[in-house]
Length: 166
Image (cartoon, rainbow, N blue to C red; front, side, top):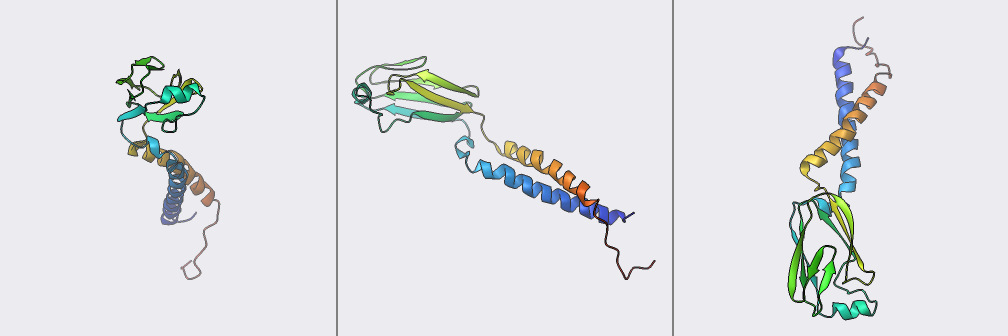
């Protein structure tokens, strides 16, 4: 039976390796999810003048996105600078006015929309990615992996020291 300090050392190194791999697996996707790594805020979408004519010709207004990603708690404010009234799902936005939509839960929505050529607008509402969420992801992946590495490391025999007394 190997000494306790060797087993503890193997366990510690294995857990560190597992946490390092867990951090890499968790944090690399985070680099691509930065739009949800923020607190809720007010986001303004402006419908520019002439949008109704562009949509009637089947053109995509260049300043308007076709879909948007939000975090829970965001408020979408739509400012209509066009001379025509517009509609987005439950909102009716008169010309030269604004309306707002509170996004209170995580969901994917496809609203009927009068300022898009396809007559719909996609809203993807996600949970905010917080520091706590990121730490949870690292621990959720890293600890079990570290324990698994430790179990496999116990199969490897301990190298006996040639100079140790018998």
